[in-house]
Length: 223
Length: 287
Image (cartoon, rainbow over all chains, first blue to last red; front, top):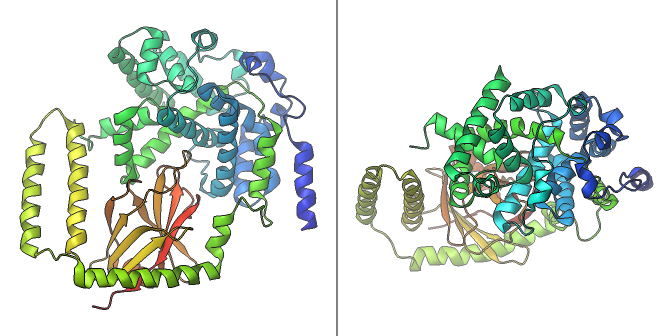
């Protein structure tokens, strides 16, 4: 019992975010913000995340904390960008890590990366919220324009896992309209209809772009 | 266009994983998903592929309380009152005894109803209805170009067929599944001979946007839990028939049923991962 208490206290002492609660706007700052993140170093090897997730399956709570420190900022960024509501995005990240802890033994590194496995939980919940409740915060066109091209700079590419780098290379092979719409659907959580309105193209055209891109991405990934 | 076409299945799985489907298309696909393991695997592969994009998402620090709450929820010691109430209940022998006793009373009432009051459907009537359904189904297949309508009609037919089953069957065991407020949420009829388990949802279960599927579990007296399948809807009045292997049906006759709330596609852990909403033990019908 007492050892349990001290364990919890030590978690709290290490809790991230106390040192730097980033402002929403600064989330867009690309290369600098990414490169100077202190936890990047120990999480840098994406291999490490898989090992951490597997350790969670064996009941290692400190592994979950390390995994949280390594991945929560990006997962929260993902949720925040889709939902535009801090409390809701935090709630979803929180639920996702509790679920990840309970179902870590179902993670199979042969099928995908730990980050994709975690992002899948977070993003599916965001989509459920968006599709069930509808968008409570209107899409703000100006803020989207700043960041809608999902292409990454070379410096950013360097910190990605090899699979994620391959996906970025495959994305770069798509034409610009398709890449743009794919980014709107993935990162902003837009429906086909919303994306069509946003880019000012007919719905059928937008659907065609996305469907063709998905097939091309898969073929490119499997090459 | 039909839902067995591999190209269409793959396209829909990709669009669903991306989150591009909305409204009716999305709900229709989720209905397909709940009964199709291969389709769920296809969706998972797409989700794992597309979510590699998350590595390029902007990093924003969540506030400190997010981790504090996670740490609290995964803590091994008895948790504060709010959390784990249902989990503890789940493990409590007293609860099972009380629930079983209550279920026995309710089941006895149900048996009386089945034995003396329920209208009997003659086999000829069932056969006639079956034939009419088959004709409607054939007619629906002829409607080219409206695959969605055919799928919807298919679902309605399945639901109608299970309702016919419900009135026509003679269960060997019955259960009433109660929630924590002892409300009869679901009834179950088990026919050991043909391994058919009929479930009917009576009341609307509590909703939780992070989890959206009801999963049905067999809980044996030694506490082992085994998934029997997903319940297709949260709408009261929904009836579904699960077809069980003979040994599972035999085991279930001496066990209890539990229904938990799970993420779509069902629990990924092989054990209930969400809250257990209602439970009830099977009782033999002495007719």
